[in-house]
Every structure is written in structure tokens, then in C-alpha cells.
Amino acid sequence: MEYTKSELMVINAARELKDGEIVFVGIGLPNLAANLAKRLHAPKLRMIYESGVIGANPTRMPLSIADPCLVTGAQSVCSMFDVFTLYLQAGRIDVGFLEGAQIDKFGNINSTVIGDYRAPKVRLPGSGGACDIASLAKRILIITRHEKRRFPERVDFITSPGFLSGRWEREKLGLEGGGPDKVITDLGIMEFDKETGEMILTHIHPGVTVEEVKQNTGWDIKVSKDLKVTREPSERELKLLRELDPKRIYLGR
Image (cartoon, rainbow, N blue to C red):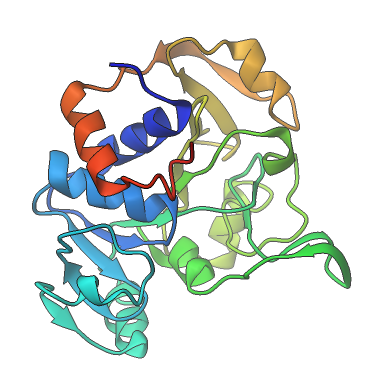
């Protein structure tokens, strides 16, 4: 079956989630990928939303964290305060699944401003709970389209911390979460060096070249010596994904 880059990106992101994990789901593409994973290979995936929904089991794609379909069939519903204190701060979240306007070479995420904070070119929605999630979840997955403007060497503003200027700095600050694990884009998958925390290209998607990734990245990104090519989507993966987003609100045309 034919597929788009966006579909390939979301399917690869969904593959990163494991059955039985507890995932704190961000809105947008993370929401789509998590719901796809639950329908594909992770039926026991427990999705938590910032609005206070624990163990969401929606029958359709939720349009926001306040969509009523999240409550129906959920394990429980609590306050936003309880979500962040009793679950996130208590170390119960396996995966934080986030998106951002900018991601830099150390996995820092910007969703606050483009340009100078005091006189921004663009004012973005801001953190919500993303800063807390990035600081405290055991591992962080990031999904975004791969464009040079989205991948500067340094973000204009750190909304959600990755490894800051390196793994040492995150450790020095005492952030309890494990930090960014993978960045999944429509060109490939990046992971982070175990010592420095710098982003490394480890997978490219079928039909994508390393040069294409480098042209769309704001620094000379390092490439793994064991660079792999991701699997193409299966017919089942594409079918379920398209059923989740029939109007292509998230996938685009």
C-alpha cells in the first residue's frame, strides 16, 4: 500500500510504545501515535492525560485532553493536581510522549516562543504540563516533522528540558526522569549519546538519504556507524491509523 511520510512517522512512533507501559500523552501527534499503539500491539498500554483521565480507553480519536470520549471506559478520573503529584511526581510514568516547535541537539524542546523571549516573532502555546513530564518521566519520546527550522542547534527557549548542554547538566540539576530517549520524525529516528547526550541519527525511513536529514537539520548531526532503515508500514498499521484520523486532521493531506 502507498503511504505518506506523516503516516510512516506516526506508525514508527507507535511502535516505540510497549504493552503494559504507562504513558503520559501529549496532544497532537503523540495522541494519535499512542492511540494507534493501543489498537495495534499494546492493548494494555495505560494512557494518562493531563486533564485527569487515568487509563483512557477511547473508542475514537480524542480531539483534545478534555474530549468526553476519554472519560468513557477510563480506569479513573481525578484532578489535574492528582495526576501530577500522585502519578508523575511519584515516579509512576514510564513514558512521556511530547511534541514541540523546536528540538535541539540535546533534546531540549521549545513550545513557548520563536525569537527573543522579550520580543518574540511568534508566541506559542507554552508548556502546559510538558516541562514536568520532560523532567520526571522515566523516558521521553518526541515526535515532530523534520524541518531545519524545527531543528536548530539551540532552541530559542527551553520550555521542556532534554539534556540541556549535556547529560552532566541534567544530572547536576537532579532531574529525576531519564530524559529524551528517541526523536521520531518523517525522515528517521534519532537517539542520544550515552555519555554526552547529543542527538545521533540511528534510523532513516525507506527512500530517505542521510544527506536529506542533514539538509533539514540546523547542525551537522552525527550519524550512527550502525545506521538502519525502518520497516515499511503494514497494511494493518495503515488501515487502523487511517480509521483513527479519517479527516486527516493530524496526518494532513
